[in-house]
Image 1: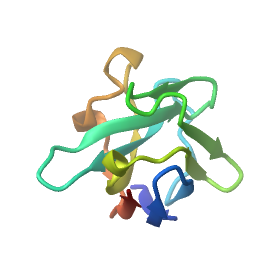
Image 2: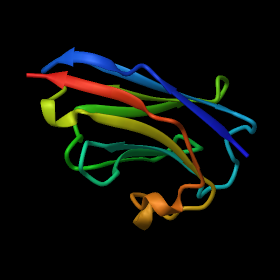
Image 3: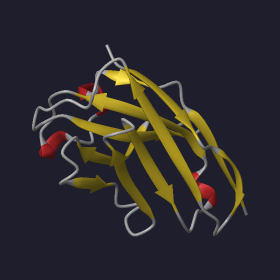
Image 4: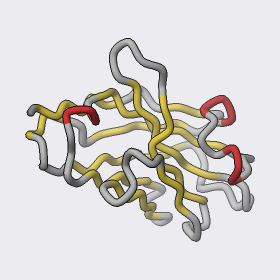
Length: 129
């Protein structure tokens, strides 16, 4: 089983930047072509929503429309770490951000949180106006 630990959250003003990290332990990035790592977020009173995902190969990335052009997901295989660079942050980006891992997820359903097998404990991101 893989363990995921997020870090990098905090308080930032609107327009600022943060970089979240997700360190994976217990297994290396899966070699399966359909494996992926993703970021989700959950604001108070709202459901957990998809933010971004990256294939273990690093070839393909996926983003929610609300973060396209502002957030960038990347991974470092040597460090078994996935990053989420968040720029031009808005107050509506305020949420707890979770890292997740999936062994087998198709591109068409990569936003579906039920398909992710392992989850981190989350890190709080607060954007002030």
